[in-house]
Length: 106
Image 1 (cartoon, helix red, strand yellow):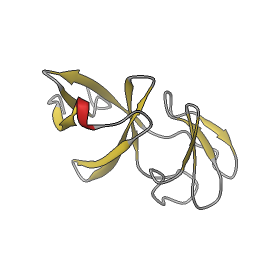
Image 2: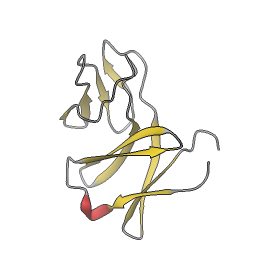
Image 3: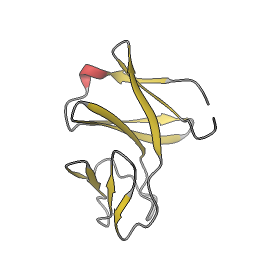
């Protein structure tokens, strides 16, 4: 998939905020941290539950179900019970709009 998908106006997402959207049937959570945007699959790799509602701790997200921690910038798992990284998606701001794309199949 090469097409960028519009998510939301960049100025509508507050610092530390997030929005969840759908990208070809995959729930994707987009976060704004330090003025930058990061996009991850909204599914904890431990049990598949949504993770976007988890607590933010700097650039880490803590799964609301079992406490696994992930880096929002890289998707890297930082603590059990998860052992697999989160899938990250390409994200950019174009013409004031946050956009995402799935670059895994390029």
